[in-house]
Every structure is written in structure tokens, then in C-alpha cells.
Length: 196
Image 1: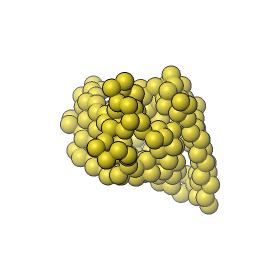
Image 2: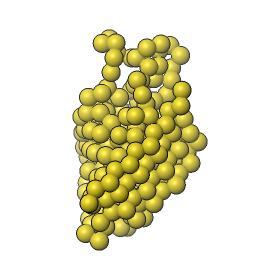
Image 3: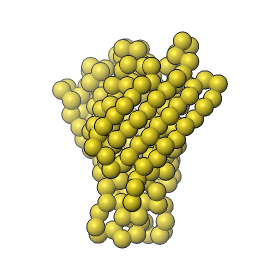
Image 4: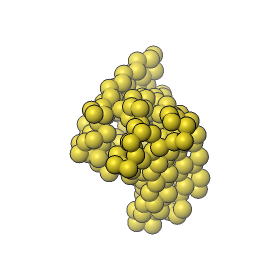
């Protein structure tokens, strides 16, 4: 099964293109016009072993909100399409990931029911490079609802904004990689309902 998707979204505020393969090698080609966000998406691809192409042209002369939020929407839609009917996958994934002083817990359920919780995030600065720290939450909210996943992120410790943000993206990648992994013990979908 070829678990890939390509999604485009074109509005008056942004033009977004995303291609993803869930069964990749962590190769990435990213250009959103927001350097730190590109760095985060590269980390997501590499640590989740997802092949990812993500391009954005947005109204970053206004700010980074529309570009990052819309990228979350498109990436979430691409993940939902790529994962398909979810037969044979683990469905749940979790990771506790350290990065220097930062420690982040991320848990994913590809349940088909969107829900998002983010706790313990207390950035010190308004921006990391050219990315607003407020947009970390907005990005993952958009991903979770567009993909229809239950996503919990909890920052356990950390005081360096760069480390905390990078830890969040990497822990999400590892949790999602576990959730989309096939398990030979699962022949249908992992649900008593029979579908997700």
C-alpha cells in the first residue's frame, strides 16, 4: 500500500502545497518563507521518517499566522489521506522526548475524532527567530483537527524557547510514527466499533 498524499490549498492569504509519504526515510524539501518554522518541519520529517515536501507563499508581510495555520490545515489533511482506512496500524502513539533541559510528552490517537490539549507551554519570548511562539499551539491545533486526531502535548520541563519548540515537533513526529506503524497482530482496525 502506497501511503502518500498530495494536498494543495489556495486562498487570498496563502498558497500551500504538501506532499507526504508515511513510509519514507525522513527526506524533506521545505520552504515556507519562515526560517524557524522550516527548521521545525525538517525535524518533524527526519524524526518521524516521513518524506515531506512543504511549500508556502503567504502574507508574511502581515505576520506568520496565516501561513503557519494554513500549513497545519494542509498537513493535517495530507496525513488523514495518507493513512487511509487505518487497517493494521497501531492507531496510538506516544513519546517522551528530551532535548537538553526540555522534556516533552506527546500522545496521539488516530481516532477520527479531533481533540487537542496542550499543557505546560510557557514561552519566554514572543518570537523564536522569525516565528511567533503563539503559532506553535495554533499549528498543532490545526493539524489535529484537520487530521481528526486526538493530540495531547505536555511540556514537562524546559526554559529555552528553541529547545522547547523543537522538542514539541520531534516528540510529535515520534508519536505519530508509532501510531501509523503497522502491527502484524492487527488485521482490521484497532477499535471495537470496526471502523475509525
